[in-house]
Length: 293
Image (cartoon, rainbow, N blue to C red; front, top):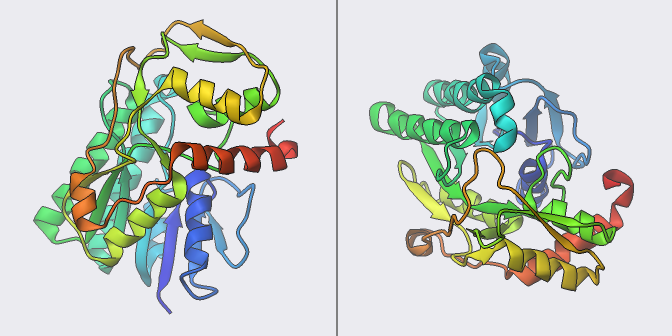
């Protein structure tokens, strides 16, 4: 029986991916490979504890795979300045390991990429991994699909470790705590509902669209300050906004928004509205307070 393997399956997007694939693939076919233990394990998934930097362990796990969704990564922007070497080992070296095994075993591979507008170890490593993926397609004929996901949000996203915008703002709003905005809040991002991102990854692999980098987002930019105000309204929060200096590795005034024309042509873009996605996200965190408080 061919396996569907998700590297990074214990993480935010990985957990959502396993929940999505659970409804599509037969029981016993899904495998997670992650260095972390799952906080929210998905029933019917085989969880294997391992590190993508270990080629031999990956070689054993990926043998017999039909599709591999490579989501494992060292995350963070300003956080990765503390460990650029580890960020490079995981995000570049780990991806190279998976690409080598895709060349050897012939499975279809999805590699998640990100917009690379800032100079920080995370952005640099993700861009390098993306370029390696394209090289393996061109030189070795490996079946690699790449989506450049924009700011993915939704349930199961960790609150404290990486200080991502949506979970941080939502959890502070729920507790009526001050919400910190870096810079003037006018920087713009494209927020993508996690299920939309996973569905797009599944479709691009299923349709065999390999060898190009496709931007995937809602196609709509949202200012950080507008995101905060929307979250405060949806939670009925008494939180106040406090402005802080920009963090290292991020730029004030940045405007990041996906060009969705290629994605629309190849797989369709059916974005969930930010308000609908935030309502679902807020409901999740309100119902899981014991994990996030």
